[in-house]
Image 1 (cartoon, rainbow, N blue to C red):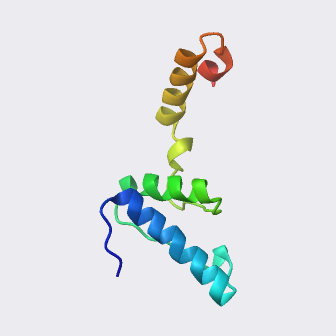
Image 2 (image 1 turned 135 degrees about the vertical axis):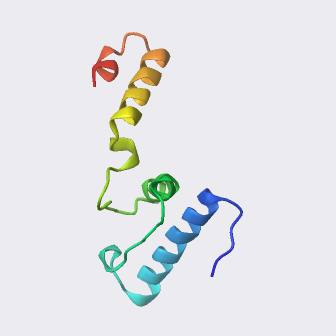
Length: 91
């Protein structure tokens, strides 16, 4: 059991545990599965996986950054940063 202060620290601990097992036990990322109770937990895990370059698939739902509302929000933010970036807005 691992005790952490927040969900990001928890996600980083999961990534560290995976990487340790892969290195010490000569396993592959595909040997592991991570289960979580609510979809809200996926974001911190996805962020940690992306930062660490850990490959992942989500079964039964969309990846956080593939959700339409998140893509729309990112497009709007890109447009705020660069008003000439109409491609991000259209996507």
